[in-house]
Image 1 (cartoon, rainbow, N blue to C red):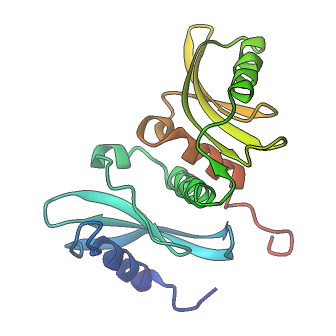
Image 2 (cartoon, rainbow, N blue to C red):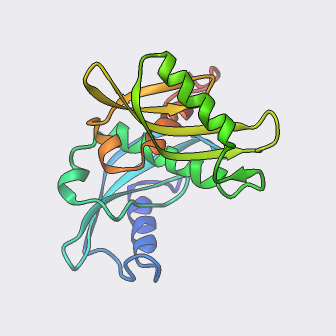
Length: 204
């Protein structure tokens, strides 16, 4: 881990990212670190991560992250930003990174086979879920043995959920859970699967 990754470094990295022409095109009028921790990150390993709160000249506020990579979800209202816990944000950023990385691999397929999709729906129905509606999906290696991931809206016992995962294993999240309401549900699911807060045994 580079020793120069301190809070001032994090603020500068976030400011440079925001100033990119494809983002806001200007540096923030205010930015400061609100959270830092050491996490496990894909292809990086044990590293420091920072959450940086910023405000732009037009009044837009947000919370970006930097350390292993710099990014911010810029289409979230400030009131919704403040409903996340810091840990939830880290999970969502990790999940975004995983899906972004996977979607740029050669074996990525935007949709699974109809047979695989139907198998996932049948699994949910056997488990008592109804009113199923596919919201998102992606597949790695669509040949035999490939893995397909799904986000499906589902109802059970009068409550609404997201079922997220594969035919072999999926997780259930209440739709009102903050990360489910304000970001693509895959992000939180994949971030939890990665669990960046888990340390290797040698680092524990």
